[in-house]
Image: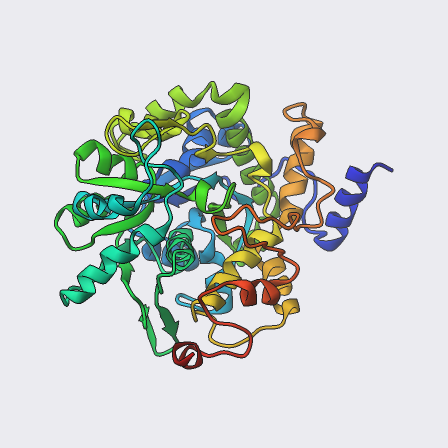
Length: 451
């Protein structure tokens, strides 16, 4: 028996409800999304007929914000949704809206950036080295922002920043960037969920499509968000992206497709069908060196999907990224949908999010390494993914070498972070303790502040 067959057999034994069949239990589905470029696999699966090929009739509905989206999935009003990777994990451990939510599919890698207002950039760039071409040298450290924040503090003014949701990648990436530059992002406690305790900055929630207008109004001075809302700031002439998440953590996991565990358990064949359609969409988005991206941009620009100007979406979706007006740089992997095993739901990706929840106090007390592993495995479901991929291979739609079937669910340790610190998903507590700012083993927020 081949290694792939062995892995498939193990998955079947672990979850015997999932089996090869064309009979979906639920064929009419309403799926939610937020107006962001990385909802693309859902739009493409619908527009290219991949859902219908699997016997699914899908309605896609834009949601006003991430909380509404999650609440509607848990309530059963939506059968699934484009989610922040932290949402299924937080819901499952009872942080915020509680509910058992699982994911069989990672929607993408990279795709975010941090943008500051023009006024902040004018002050910040005084501390940024310039290249021979007169343009800023990237990646830009948050150390360049620190004197600007201190000047606001000296004037008694708060330094307000926006992110999209407390358990979003954007929140953790923004905090990672700030902390790596010696800036305290602030902590959470069970009694204070603002995330602003002892922070040098005040980070709050703003829905993604509202980010540019909120910054233009002066309510926030910068933000972390996905596309096209960084490029929108450039196009409007109101802000400058200073770093992309590809430079914070190369090939970092981003969104996931989430459903309730109850729906997955009751609809095993539907889950395989959904996952197959999404894998096909991801392959289509990346195949032939992104040859389909121009068509994808046109689809995403439609009002029912992202609804932003096609040119703005194309700035990042087609292999470039624009910082200051005219400073457009090559960024072939700004959006990755299938390459680098982007769609596989790795346990180590889940563990990283949990370490950041602990780092900033959303998980208020220590957890054993085994807890991180068990929690990841209760939410991330590579068994469903593998069965879907095997069906695509059997149908001749995909080939075995396109997938990481021999994975134990953990990516290899990596130091592909802005600060060079190594992350090993099998040793979460050692990783947490290696980070310069944030809670350490045995610490509470009060102890961290007093040190």
